[in-house]
Length: 155
Length: 315
Image (cartoon, rainbow over all chains, first blue to last red; front, side):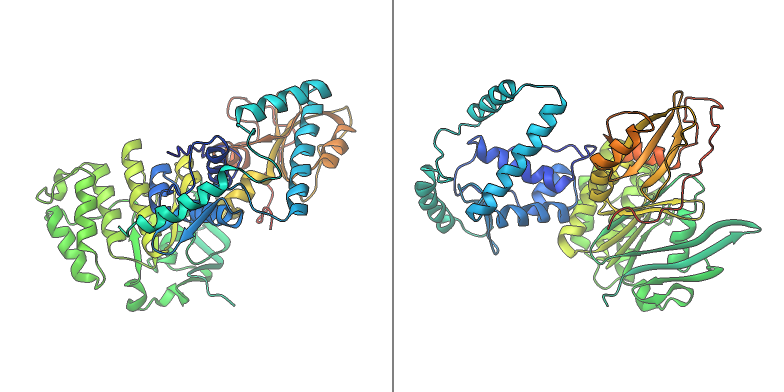
């Protein structure tokens, strides 16, 4: 089950909060490939936000390969992480780490402290299975995904 | 050129010799939700009434679905839903009669949707209008407007007088409309946390025109408050990116559009600078249109800065 929570008063745009919450659920292993996401309307009502915002979040998640949308059937988790060209993936990772490192520097942390904190974050998110962006569970997950979509009928 | 369902072009309006709108200009993109904000008396209701053709602009033009609202054809009115501030309903009718009456005036009226929504809100078809609470009347008006399947929905402070649970129901009704039809919505409101949830774009009306006309996410991502205590003889900073300077007990609070590190470093050369803070819409609103010296502080305003005429935040 995916629990998506947002904070409308936060400075982070709502669609980014939705994208992050979904990616977080994947990273924490709370969803399996083939799991269905709530419809745009369902999630908009659940979070009491504009359906345009949810739509935009879903578009970004699909672009990143985290979900796949099927006409009339809904949106499903692919079970894969973000799908991007290797150089682009590397660039985004560098970007993220540089930003985190800069902020950490301004907060007065040492390099060792930052490394330790990063390691703790990674452990929390069960990164063990991942190598070269390929999640060993992804293959079995893909099978599960197609199986699920076949058995699913329109509601 | 894409056509905008709602357009204000340099609209001016006076009441006797008091100017209310002094060149109001903005457009609403199709399928978006635009929140018109402003303090009491800032002219929100006047603007909406001009848009609906209930009131004449003294100068400039308002267009609704492409038509000048000074001469609005009946066919256009049929494509527009309106919820007035005072939730006008015929007092002799029952809820059911009000639904049937509305259905009679609109070919595309969704009876089923209306009755379901009414049931969800917890009042009965048989109840008479005068028996409804103020909040229930507001809910009924919105349900009737949305059930008419309007291309454009205009609401004047729809949440006024509703408790927080009723306001959520109201959002539900709006969300349904948006999910079903991609309608364009223009509404005024004082409930800024609701606005944060539902609005794509925000306009802040102040002194007769828009002080801000920006995407919600741009507002949140770009505008930062920075506390600044200038050294002796250093003037508070000016520039296009300075949205507001407000006197504080010590120094000033600056509202800056997208300050980068270089901007902050430049400030640091002139005095003490705090960390840039992101703001909720409510804080942002108060920072922009609140009194200069701040609500809790009396008469400290030596550098009385009126909010500057900054119509666009960001791209």
